[in-house]
Image (cartoon, rainbow, N blue to C red; front, side, top):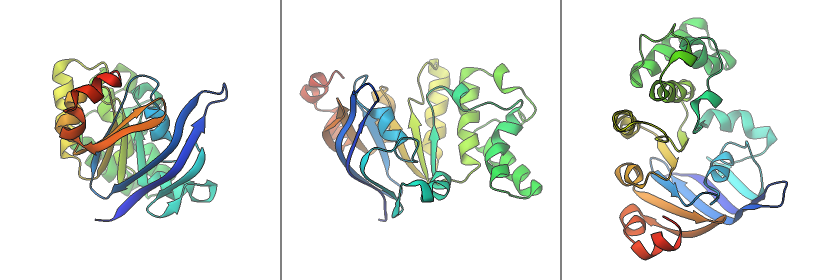
Length: 233
């Protein structure tokens, strides 16, 4: 298997002095599905934001061997797609088509290729036919699917999700889990939804107060009741 994420001694503190990540070491191989779990304030979102350089702390982060630094951000952000917890943070164009086309247009692709990609990814997320809908008129579940489509249109090799099932009703949650299960790329999923992590991920990283408390197979970590209780899960 090909190593595609390498993190060495990564630390990050916010301006008010809160330590969000403390000497994190982590690796991921191509095709893995990894869950990032931990209580509120554990550093899960901060961890994800380092994968494509939105945040940059002390230590080393490499994606496909490329160091996450200013000179490499354009390339890295095409390889690592990040889907935020709130899809409204990701959808800002008038229509669904405009939102999904935004990335490919900024890659200077020809119009017919942009249109082809938009239709392809909307079909993949079950939203084909919504191209001219206003994004702000969609349900939360529909918005999450479109947010995923905006990233898939860039054809990334790694997808990082922040709480993908948050605030969804049971039906929409099941539908989204099915969608994620069918995605054919490396997945990094940060979530409190341990049942979803159990269904989708083969490996789990447990964070608490910015430190890695445990790492191992999903069954090993989530099945350790004492470890879960000690870490607020």
